[in-house]
Length: 291
Image (tube, rainbow, N blue to C red; front, top):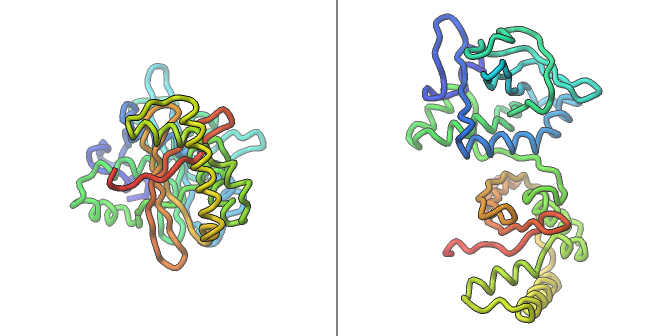
């Protein structure tokens, strides 16, 4: 049995005699929608890895949405590669069930906008594979070890590769950590939004949200931020890898859970409020577990 036919749970697979299993991706599932979005936001890392694969990267595959009239399926492609215009080419790795436009082992080209996931295996560990993780999250905790064993992969929270910029909440957090590592106070302040942080803090105290109170509170928060760095130094986010999860409050407010994997084997988890400002996503204050 090939890898692509091993990596999905029974509830998401149609077993077919003599043929690879077909994976169903429930488009209505919020968890799956986030998995597809996450794959698109981190696709740059997969493309870069294809261009210059490292010795510890032993497998590359990419999932695409195949459309046939009113029908569609999400199917994995092996041997993926991109042309100079960014179009994707690969070999169909699963026998289609609901579409007739492609068949198993067929080499195809497809628009990159139809990509829904990607995966590599690095040092025996799954990187990417966000729809696989979404399926695994639906498996009962007692059965997760059997799920991992059945596909022969080590699956943890993973390592995400968001771009370090203000286009995403995760990128804003990475930008702040980069500023810390570079000991650049101005860059760190640029990653923050003390005004929105003040609004959020005041609303939690059931106090009137007048402009003067918000601005004075924002000033205090910024001064406190600067003073804390001056007294205790910049936090160290070097030599770590990150994974992120989102909790949507509204279109402009996400709570981000960041899992930090340190090269010495340590692990830490923090929750941060993020806000989408006129100049991009910004990092607000951390969330206390007791909240």
